[in-house]
Amino acid sequence: MTGTPRDPAFQASSPQARPTRDLHTRAAACTLALLPAVVACAWSGHDWTPAIISVPAALPLLQDHARNRGSEGSDSERFFQQMLLLSLWMRTDALAARIGAMLALFVIDLALRRRDAANPFHPVMVACALALLVFPASPPERVLSEGAVPLAATIAAGGAVLLALRCVRWQAPVAMLACAVVAFALGSIVVPAWLGDPALLATFPSFALTAFFIVDDPPRACMRPRARLLSGALTGVVAMAATFGLHALHRDGQFLLLALAGTMLLANAAAPALDRLFSVSRAAGKAGA
Image (cartoon, rainbow, N blue to C red; front, side, top):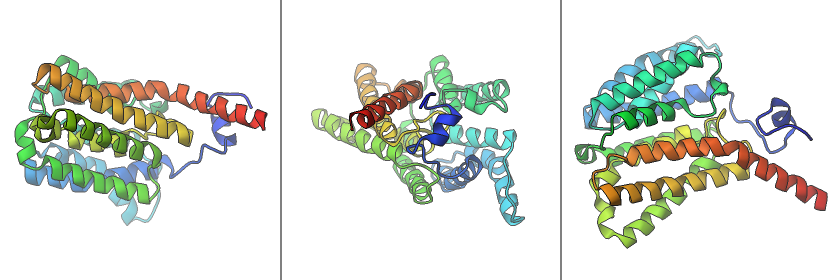
């Protein structure tokens, strides 16, 4: 069989490339799953930006449901869904970083409107990485005391619902979270003070968002199950190791979210190679048999 793992013909003929929900249904479910986190963010952190953005993001979906009709979705709906995800992910103490990320996402959307799959990198991660490079910002310690850990739990609960509904494939999220937890536990054993470090714990909501709502984005994630497992595992380990390393060097937390965004972009870049790797190994196994 010829072709690459990203070719439509390859995906249609490959028994490993099992689709879940269609993209519009998946996007709608992800938006609705984020709404409890929006409420938690406004209630405990007094951050109303996600709540404001959630109105244009969720209203068309609720209208479609009320009218009992499907929709293929529009570019504006997808843009506001991504903007909602960005506003929850960018939990920093610098307003300039969040505004810069939103402006970057707007430019990316204009450049790739109607061609989202042409972008091999997740647009939210690109926008956040660019903004954090220009406006380095630390996760605010006050967010931890006002509910960062409960917020992460709320996000994880929404992600678990997506997994149960098969709107998100389980391999990458589970592997990323499991390996990140193991890496965090090992790092806390080596340096016990990190276990309660506010700057590190304040990144938990962003980790949960990345695991459940970003790492398995269909146009940019691996197609094969084993490739998704490996990609998620590497993402969790590298992201947590980079977070610990940068925090140990600088002690101010200003690069923690940038480390997570950069790791996710590396995972996007590696996805085609991982798919080819497991395609070759599968073909070699069949030839040997």
